Length: 273
Image (cartoon, rainbow, N blue to C red; front, side):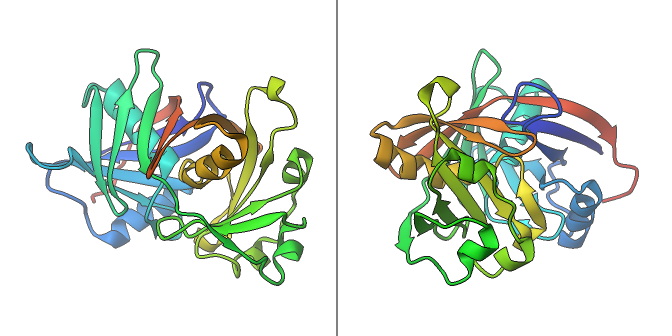
């Protein structure tokens, strides 16, 4: 069984968000404990497991994602990584449909090698700033929104880009404030930078202190910033140490996420599933 590590939402190795990808046979997924063990061994933000489905159904591949600590309902960068592996190995072409916990997701390959994911738009609900959040995050929120059932994050708007970049959160304290994580965001300092908004994502509750580039978070960032900037097509920079760009297109209850990916490791799993 081959394991590939793919850097997602980047066109350069050792940047973006690395994901493990394992393409399984048609017999389906092994036991949950084995999937979790492999994800813990790889110790990446997420490891994706996919197997082909019978022709003629609603989806082409079944897809699951595991952090080193738990299974998650939605993951953008590991979906992008999986689609990249399918296309670069010749296992799929054109548009691929995935059956996942959060419903049917699609990925469409473009001639330039980029991929567009079709994900559900996060429903944003304004909230009062929870007690202790500012201290845990290390900055005073301008606004706070819940991002709905699939991600379970808090989207926290800060005063400016410098505030987002300068965060040094108390990760243990952050675990009390959302089911999955906290996304900090602000408008870009200036349009000449090539992106419209900046973000960082912290997910200690699922074993990830800071995620390098969080595709699923952009299903909330897209409607949030589209409403404020008056445009449906935007580019977000996730300003982690590895950094990465996500191009977003808001389409009502769906959000399109476009990015590049590059395979950096192709190895072999030497234990049975």
